[in-house]
Image (cartoon, rainbow, N blue to C red; front, side, top):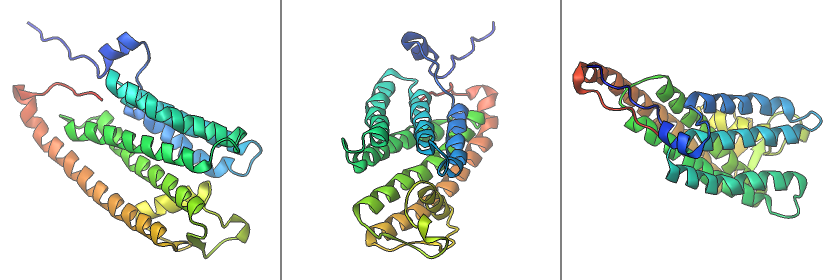
Length: 244
């Protein structure tokens, strides 16, 4: 007698609510589009609109990626609405809300996304494409999280960052510069063309460098452990697939 196939992650909830739950791979594609697009759209006409659209795509894709359970979906929607609304209000009606509000809301939602993806990776019974894409997404989300943090610090504490290279017209911690500095710090490359000056900026940069290094080490260890134990589970002791 054949055993029934396990349900796809989130499929029952998806049928009840009536939307397509994004996979980690689809969410990763949205993230990559954002990171590739930011440097190119910054200096074109309507580039800021395109940037906000890309960011909105990532945030909404995050909701659909982790919203396989009703409670998680509700929390994701509650947390993402201020972030998305703040982004569009800042674009068209900047006088209505302070820019810091949108950044704080975005930080809170990104922390929520990272936690959901990390929980998924740590509970995964096996290594598959979904787990790998979730792990890569966490790393990119960490860079995005600190990008928001640097933008917030630059707005609240003037001259928190010093620029030692490039034309003076580009010496501001905005847009592509914030993305660049965040991922250079996350990967511990540190070219030195952007230097944190204030104590808060230095603390954030140090925390990001440590987090990036530790996450890669922990992720590799977790994936190796899953791979080494896959053979045991395949002998009749396999666990059911988990879901967000």
